[in-house]
Length: 263
Ligand code: URA
Image (cartoon, rainbow, N blue to C red; front, side, top):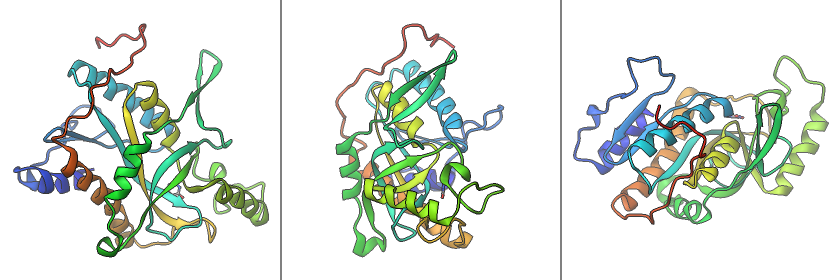
């Protein structure tokens, strides 16, 4: 995220790219936070629990800052399904590990299913930022599957356990291909469900770092992964450059009436 903050500082701000500063340093925060003009850039750790905590705290922060016209975009890595590694996927729909368009939240022992809805127009606008011939990569629309773990949940055969085999895995992968699922990661259900519940327009832009039809282990070099990581950053930075000063329609962020937002 520091790298993205530097890129944005260069692309949209008069400020020097070397001036970006982690606003969350010092405390016990597990996150990093940068601010470039009106853009907040935050990191989170792996999986739905981590991004769910971040989003709750960020939404409260935005409420206290009286922000009511916001766009949240998640950028990150994922495993591709039937696409060339390095392809960028802009998510259309998000499925959980049971192939439901929902994020399961268990509250006081009872499971609730929160719909995972993203903003379709925003996804299209982000894809339009891609100039494949110049960029040297493609950004495509596709559905995303989000799981609670990296190994069994993503039916890998290179973890510590596997009660299934290559044939089982390929059969399931063909179901995913048929459904239009183009990538798999671990945060999108929570991100799509929480932003939708809060009435915040949102999108997900993830690069793929392997093709799961061909294997489970990420074999790309660090240098290659670094190049791929910059691809979602590039698209989102372009989008921000074109849209930063265009006010989007004001929307009211939803909060639960019982939530104590004073803290
Ligand atoms: N992140 C994931 O969750 N899975 C992958 O295969 C790659 C990145």
